Figure (tube, rainbow, N blue to C red):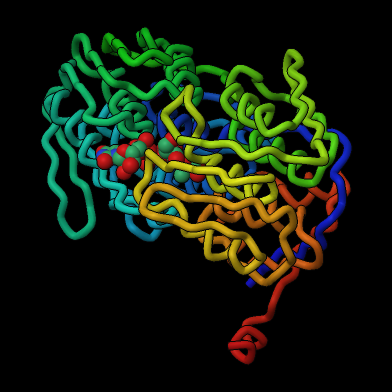
Length: 427
Ligand code: EPZ
């Protein structure tokens, strides 16, 4: 088992470059199956969710070649199957994207129900509602979702709630459906726009991505492309909070400032200096952090994937802050870990009340999920003393070389490996 060991208190200084967006990449890789020719995808983050996506593509018969650390060539011309088993699907949530990609490509898909972060119930009923509108039938048996259609036809879908996964999945399948598909109450996240741009670069006909109505006119043929993925707004936001939490001065490079607006506004309200440039932002932590109230919302609102990180920062601010998690029904599990470090937070359902304590104390903690793990890193960097973080595999699902990037900013962080037998003894 591996752990991060962090000695807190350093003010992080310097520059960090942001990697490609995880939640764009995990949709774009399956979408590559829709092409009738090889595609080249650049600026892919080097994270374990991508490793699993590549394993699934290869299990389906696609030829995948790593041209360099962040560039893949995918040739989907000789698929041999349409099944994604639990042994692969259980490792990440985004395995559900192979439903839409395979349905669009060959009219049939068998994909195990997904794994991924435990944020409460995470059904896929809206995805299935969308596929049904495209004339596909579905059944769920033995944990496998089976989809099939003899003729994919365009349809009209009104999502009951904004769903990133549902929007992306239906958009993929609709690219090859006969006629016009209209998705209403669509997700507007930057990674939805990135997926639409990728599909359009292959010859798809998608209009309105980034608004709440997306129209897709099906096409016969999708050709090859060379496409570069957008920067990761959540990785960028996480480093913005790290700079603020350590009272540092960090230039975060290779970002799209517009994607960070809701985070920038909240940090400025807390007394943090954020300077925006064309493709970078500089964050300068101030001495005193002010309280703030946060409600997570679909884009362009404050992102739920930044909720654990900003809540950790608020434990260091003066006064009482309220954080409302309106997207997921159980995304405060990390609070117990923060309490071990001296945080004063009370949680009632979807609302957390945070009393600023000014300083946290290092302690052994664990990562409950990907963004909870990022919150533990933030807390450890800001705390007095040493923090050890277990279950860091969650963090490595979504952050490319995070310890190397942090060390380059002056953080005292290292990864240690605990031999299995030592773990047993420690129990
Ligand atoms: C995507 O998850 C992201 N994951 C999540 O990021 C992110 O938190 C979430 O979107 C919201 O932005 C990937 O892109 C791989 P949803 P997804 O469908 O698609 C409910 C991270 O940290 N819902 O937008 O699962 C659902 O339960 C991860 O990078 C249904 O009820 O999110 C949730 O309450 C964590 N039925 C809400 O909608 C459905 O069919 C939003 O979920 C679909 C969703």
